[in-house]
Amino acid sequence: MIPKLFFGYFSVVMIVLSLLIISRKNPIHSILWMLVMFFHIAGLYLFLNAEFLAAVQLILYAGAILVLFLFVIMMLNLKKEVFAERYAGEWPVAVFIGGTMLVLILLALTSLTQGPLGSFTIGVVQADTHARAIGRALYTQYLLPFEVASLILLVAVVGALVLAKKHLKSYK
Amino acid sequence: MNILDTVTSWEYFHFVVQFVIMLIKMAVVISVTMVHVLYATYFERKVIGHMQVRLGPMRVGFHGILQPIADSLKLFFKEDIIPAEADKTVFKLAPVVFTFAALSSIVVIPFYDGFVLADINVGLLFVLAMSSLGAYGVVMAGWASNSKYSFLGGLRSSAQVISYEVCMGMSLIGVILMAGSMNLSEIVKAQHQHWYGMFLFPQILGYFVFLVAAFAETNRTPFDLPEAESELVAGYFVEYSGLRFSLYYASEYIGMLVMSSIAVLCFCGGWTLPPFITNAVPALLMVPGIVWFLMKVYFHIFLFYWIRATVPRYRYDQLMSLGWKVLLPLALVNIVLTSIVKYLMG
Image (cartoon, rainbow over all chains, first blue to last red; front, side, top):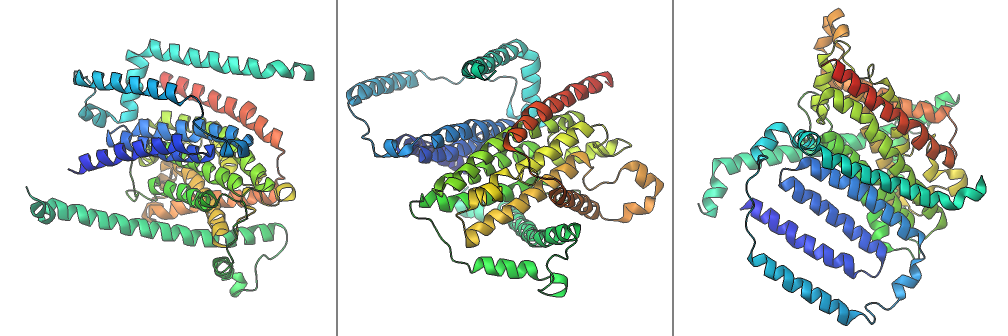
């Protein structure tokens, strides 16, 4: 009973928050609503016994990525954005694409089946603590994908540096 | 089973009792923290006063002992001013977010063996997450005040907190590696397994990086650029007055308390004494653990004041290059060294 109430609360509030995020005129307000939503996502992770994921969700998404969004948007001159007309012109295209997606998702929902139970059941994860379980899986079973992902991220970091430094050459 | 059975069942009663005990514990911890904040300001003014060959507050009560109460009464009754053109909701919300972030870190801190409000497995990560939430309180205040000084203070602070959070997280990884856990109580117990009893000795690099990052995270001198009074008046909270201002002020002291506690728990053995001391003087085992914990915490808080009275403020580009070019590489070296030693030791 109580778990179902919890899940119901999180899912309903997250849908409402998503609507709030895309419907605010002021981008700063959108970001603040997004912060609330990230907290709800973290709550949902906690509810699934994924405490490490919940903490990382807050540290990375709320603590780093969203702050950078906020940083960039605060630098922009928002006055024009706030008073500009929205949803101009393109709405028939948007409705068409959205409707198609909805139909596709509804069609896909009918053929939904539960996946097979993996080796990481809640009991195993709780006995081993979530952080240890996820670390062990990442560094043994999924070592190669993990390293590939970190290489891709490294390339992105170097790429960003190269792009940003291009204009700085005149200083040297 | 119908609702009435659930309500009257023994398990439900047990749950309610647990819940009420939890609430009482929370109320006690929060009120003690707030009293601590009151007297931390007094402590700071006295310490800095004496370091600058002054007496500090002397007028209210014996040696100014009632000064913090007079100050807080004054703040409570001040007029609350919201600037015109400010984003009112965000302006009102910002100090609440900041205080919430500071106070909620308290729940994972074990004050002595077994006394912790939430004994969660990722306690250390929780503290980091909450300190990153604190950045929002600052940025929101800076943006919502619609003032250039606040805005610049907010921007500086967000950049500073993001940079130093990375260093802080990295400096704690050495401790996590040695303890094999992110639960703060487990970390303290792991330190007690060694004869030296404190990770301070093997993790001296990590401790140094952590302390510097903690100063930057709590916006204290020498890294108090977000509120540099000579250039930004008071930085991000310049437009705040009365109770809202006092929330910011109090949260800064709570932040110092949290950072000092984390330093004590992760590097100084928490509520325990190193075994080589207790073996030499067994009588020290009679002293309750919270005494040692508080002594260590207040030493670190004293360190915050000491450095404030000693060191001038950094320039902003120096702050950034210190964080990214000195502290972060040091922390990474620390992680590699710790891993190698741990691997060789088996």
